Image (cartoon, rainbow, N blue to C red; front, side, top):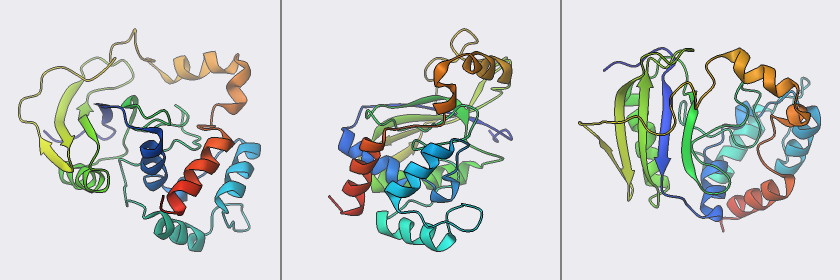
Length: 220
């Protein structure tokens, strides 16, 4: 089945250690997207990572390329993690969490991906992190009302391998209107009245980010 313009990513897998989560998140971060409306947090992150910025306070391409090489980044267009900071509507997001849990239900992976592109990225992920054991679904029809979600593809990742599952049954995780926001308004309006709204783009503590960055850049 062909994918929608903005297909949703559903993932569930076996929990990994915090050290493994550090490696996954840092190596699957797209450094060119390290942006936030939270200026204080952005400044802290840039200081921790040693980001070189241009005149508009964006990461310089030279620094981005050096950082990718230093951490051995995976080149991912759709399946990257945005767990450090994100100005996305859902905030920091991704299929790997800092506590080591492997799961996500709440975001699309981008515009017009193809099966071959997703499969290629999953193979790169499986090769880089052979300890991963997870189910991955690409789901069409997950529009704002979640009326008719359909599994376009399901993949199994295990022991460094990726398998396209021919017979898939249930949708992964919570996926009904009672479990997930049905609209942009439902996502944003409640947040405005919460004290942590101004920090909603922060995905990790400075202390944990320092540990993760040191671990991955030192090759531990």
